[in-house]
Image (cartoon, rainbow, N blue to C red):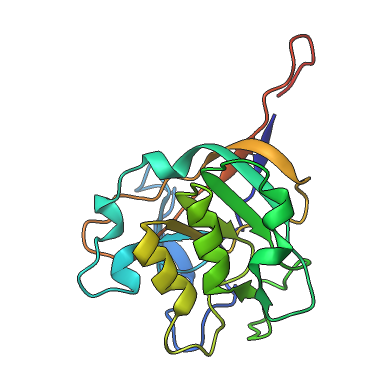
Length: 214
């Protein structure tokens, strides 16, 4: 079974204030003088579901196209980490990390309105990143716009990921996903000079023999 955990990209989706908005249109349309439709898009690479590269939070960091792909494919654990505090603290997820998990996706909130920007979203404490690193995580994913609070100027969670060499997925859609173990596939595009990339993120749960699937 394949579960899509990507947010749709369409005009009107909300983004960080001041960031480039998503826009789309047509360069060519099928007609008497043209046999094809050709679309065009302009948008921030942080629109929708995306992977951050170290270049996003470190001037000397690697661009997204230079990153190894292995962290973005493989076993992962989805954890319901909803809570009342502005930051998800390590003690809130420690019990769900009963073994080493190379990829961890955290549901931090109920569904967000993708067309209305809000700074009131839950993020991650740097100590939570450090706990994940201790448990062997090479990637962390969340269903909110950033691993840090929207108003942060020091980006402690991003910097904790930098120190740990951990990859970041943001703006996932996890409200329809049951907590548990899956296979993650969330490949970034090979942008040679940019700090992030949209991804089409999916989870795959392998059905037992005779269980069917799609």
